[in-house]
Length: 127
Image (cartoon, rainbow, N blue to C red):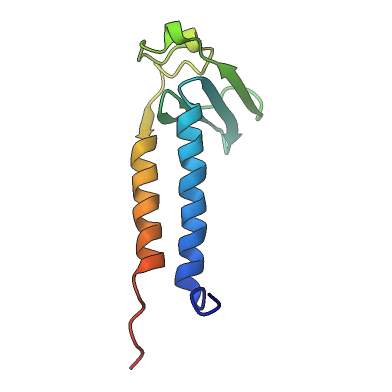
């Protein structure tokens, strides 16, 4: 076991596997709970929201003072089928701002595959 973790690749693979597990837990919680973080950096507001199996990033020009905010909110099952992001869920109204959506399943898949690569593939012999 001592020789298994010799080198940086397998250690990084275990850290990546832990990241995949954390992302998976966030994915499982996202249908019933919305979490958002809003912050102002260099005159722009950035918003990151986690809901319904998606991670939503948006940004717009800040108007007013610099601040940050975060919150959590339970999403009732009656609102779950409604795929539109709006104030119905108590979350950020991003309909008027450009946004980018990442699916959690994609993030879990990528981090799991990368972790498997780092842990299982044997390093090349040095010349």
